[in-house]
Amino acid sequence: MEKQDKYANIDLTKIYEYSELPDKKSGRCDNCDGVNFKNSVGKSKFLRECLNCGMKKYI
Ligand SMILES: [Zn+2]
Image (spheres, helix red, strand yellow):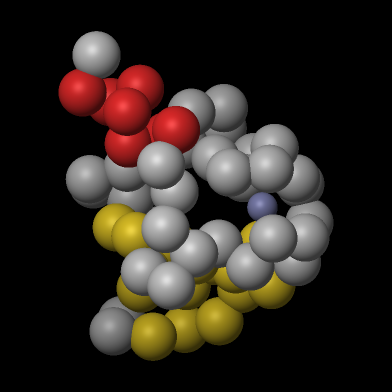
C-alpha cells in the first residue's frame, strides 16, 4: 500500500531513485505513463527525464 501512495503523489521537483521507486510499468513514466524520455548521465547513473511531465529518476 505504501508503494501505491508513492506513485499517487509524484513530486516533480524531486529526483527519484530507481531503488526507492521502481518503474510501475517498465519503461513508462510513473506519473503520466509517457514513453518518451531524455537520458543524461549524472552521479554515475542515468538520469531519465520524462519529456511529457518532467518527472526525473535515476535509473
Ligand atoms: Zn511523465
